[in-house]
Image 1 (tube, rainbow, N blue to C red):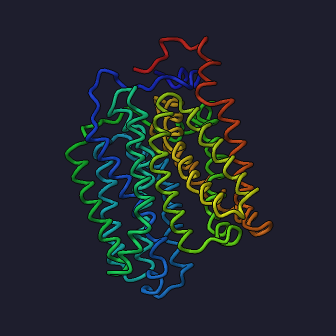
Image 2: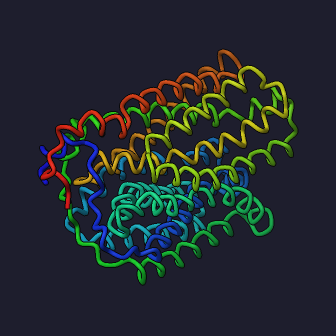
Amino acid sequence: MSSTACSECPDLPLPADTAIAPRWAAVASLALGVFGLVTAEFLPASLLTAMAADLGVSEGAAGQTVTATALIGAIAAPSIPLLTRRIDRKHVMLALTLLLVLSNALAALSDSLPLLLVARVMLGVALGGFWSMSAALAMRLVPEHHFARAMSIILTGVSVATVCAAPIGAWMGELWGWRSAFVAAGAVSVVTLAAQLFSLPALPPKANPDLRVLGELLSRPGVRMALLAVLLVISGHFAGFTYIRPLMENVAGLSVGAVSAILLGYGIGGFFGNFVGGYIAGRSERQAIVFGGTLIAVLAASLLLAGHSSTVTAIAVVLWGFAFGAFPVGFQVWIVRAAPDQAEGAGGLLVAAFQIAIATGAIGGGLLVDHVGATGGPLFAVVAMTLGTLLTLRYGPGAVAMQGSATTPSSARTD
């Protein structure tokens, strides 16, 4: 299928062979990889004080280990598919997982901040490269009707890491020092490498992405709408959630122990929300995003109106985690359907949009918090989430399909 045909038909079925047997072991190995990547990404948040003291730097300087990973991840996401376009995707995935192993090992051995930053840069490459290719790989491992379920399983690794990484990292850091947490993460990454080595089939490259292709992808209405929806919805989420702790402590008057328990509930809610989001996305990714966006907008509004109530705040934060679980699967399915012939390139653009949205939400929410107080985050979330949800409702995959179905030639379908 030519790119021109696809640009005219931005909501084609996934190009998976419905006759192939699903490779669930390979899908599970990718989920394990997600768990290892996100765990390593989240560890500094729970180990920051100990890391700074041991390396002899300020906590602010140590916090740049998180910034380095995010920035490199945003660059690597669209770049890795371009740089590896002629290499078997199994070999690329194994190389990225090996990079994760080396990153954890180097972090555990680091005796200076520059060396630790090198380790975190390596993690950013692995993280961005994996996310840019995850949906394209899932699309080739299972039949079309199992794609949303496969993505839900892969993204379960995010939910489990969200629940486990911070508390377990803090516990291990307290008992055996901060390096022990990276040793444990390294052990998980070694198991992941072995699992992927034996479960992933050969996956010769199909697409041949380049800078011209990325530009062509941005000309497709379906891709543009998906990226714009990501910028609105995800920035709204991070504006609200990044500054949720000041609201819980300063407005709702919750204790530190209660805050920790509620945040654990948020992670558990996200775990189950991922499955529900995958279930809904299996029927309509548009409905999954609208469901999550509508619920978060309502929850953010409840925090604005009744954030002084500890009960309302606790329930809202836990349900917020549940609602957010609908987004990753929904957006991954949307972007692949918008560009089935260039899934890796589109996936890279999606990851870059996520990273930009995270930064936008954190900056915008921070400015509002500084000017109007702790409710500034939920205020940003209400506005951005409402706009993003309405955009998805009007221009999401289902709406595009209805508008273009009458003119979509059957010959334009992807094999």
